[in-house]
Length: 598
Image (cartoon, rainbow, N blue to C red; front, top):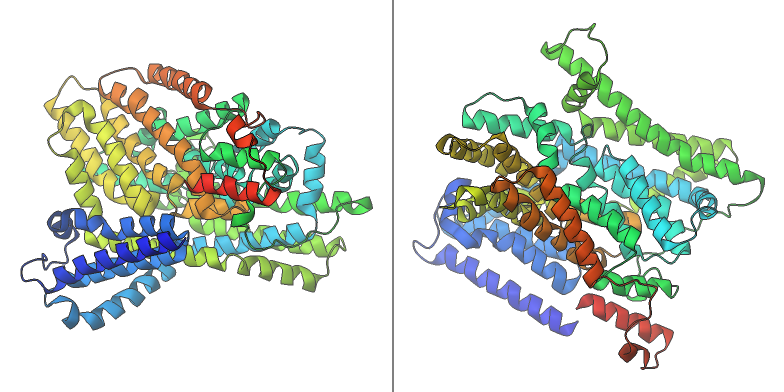
């Protein structure tokens, strides 16, 4: 740990020296506030803030400190690029720090997400204190008797909660945790399942909280290219080309069916099979004790657990439809007497105020959990409310991380980092490599600024680029455009899936009760494998004109081959060299965690 701290101090000192040089050396900084100018002029230096945050997260295992360091380095870099230098603009720097955070917190969508996290956290705590999750686990354990079945049920539950990635991350983990713990499935594996059924599912679901954003950004890309296009229809057509999202789900299910793991996840699963689902060296805060789920009240506890979640899902989906329908009528897109149809349902979901409605649904579910627990006599009304407050407050640390991550993303946008990455990767390349390089650039961008930050900036660049190439190459079909659009969507989700400083990663580890960095280290090899297969057997062949259905067949065969060759069954005994060394239970756990660190 001391070596990692020294390395972190060295990295911070090196970054500070570079920024100070830019601020004081004559003509060293571009002296501009235009993101495009800054991104081009700073070049690789525009990547310093997000890279610093990621490097420190791996060195210190402290996401908050890492995000603060990355955010402050971005602020200093912006000051160094202002006319007059850092000293003259020092007061502006203080103002920039607080104004950025204030803008983030007061942004309507961000405020809705914060309230969503707090209300779901409160609801989960009320259910947990009532013994609801334990009662559900007892029912499930009558039919689930192996880690493989537990994994599959968790994956199916994650797909059922398809309409919002934040809700998925915070609901599926607490519901499945008693089951996976009982069957000796590691918390890291549960976090991987939760994370793999959050953004990858919501991002390609035809009705979800993401649809409105994705359709709006696609339309913005068409507008930037000076052409008219059907955003929602284009999104639907692009789904088969979203290789990373689809293959993440395929990889997860095939892995569960084959019951094979590799890398740090294999070590975590072997540790769990010995009765330790969570590594002792990365223990989370002590969880609230549930009330015993037995006796005549067992069915009441099950109702307390299930009904609020059903209310949440139904309220969100129904309100999406009616709010979106009202928006379509107001815009003149449809008439008030338009009959119900799947097309209308899809259009309504694309027009609804999803963030606000999901927050309202979570509040309704919280109220239901409190009232049911009190009315059934499981807890008094006062105790249930206090449980809710305790659950909401337990997510304050997560909210702070989200605010810092969004703040870093805002600073990175001002530095023009995305412009630099896109220009650096897509300059003077053959047309058939464009979908692949768009995907890779979006993977890099989203790893540091998250999915939305990537999609918002990259899509208006990718669509005009694709249409320009298609005009120059008349033999290219619409599949080329769809491949470029899906590369932005899939690449944006890659970072959301595996970066230690993005929202879904943070919420998934919290929901699963797993240390954030342990989740990142165990999931990273799987995410990188899926991304590599998406390129080698997906975007590259599509760029060369290969049919998308054939690409998916090749991808599935490749996934099976990788798992068969590199994977091992966690129930199998480990290498004899490891078994020959006598160890105490505690030293075995420490050794397992050290392997994860490596």
